[in-house]
Amino acid sequence: MSASEFVYQIYIRTTPAHLYQALTDAEAAQQYFGGWGPKSDWQVGSPVLWKMGPDGDYQDLDQHVIAAEPGRTLAYSWHRVLPMHRELFASEQEFEAAHTEKSQVRFDIEPAEVPALGVRLTLTHDGFDTPESTMLAGISSGWVMILSSLKTMLEDAERSSRD
View 1 (tube, rainbow, N blue to C red):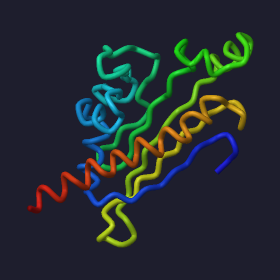
View 2 (cartoon, one colour; view 1 turned 135 degrees about the vertical axis):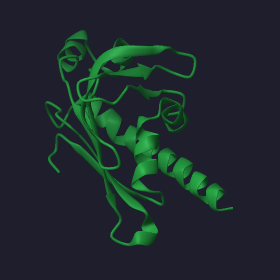
View 3 (cartoon, rainbow, N blue to C red; view 1 turned 45 degrees about the horizontal axis):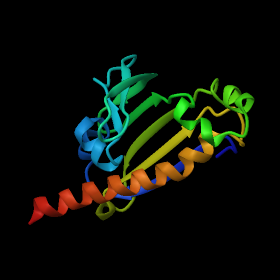
């Protein structure tokens, strides 16, 4: 892992198909993103729209699908720093400089080395200009919370389906 990327692995007791479905289903995403989340037809080149809060509408933030292999890989470009992030910067100059940065996120799904553990999800968010990137700092804690919520949602669904 380089200093200008974020990589996180998590094991989820589910199937690759269920995990991919959760990553690409807009209603499911709103659950584990806390009312936010992406929506797309998940075809390479298609836009990825974002619901901006539980009461918000989907918006085009200039994100696009880079890769989509059901049960294996999903990748899309990430939005630039938004006006709502302006208060995170000490000056207008810092905000404008950060506004040019464009990153991407990739989800790689593999069977766990121990089948009872389900699948291993590796998230790689990279393409940041510097290790000091404000967006990198924000996504580093954000993705951990989001993927923990995704894990809980999927494992609860798996338990319910067995009962």
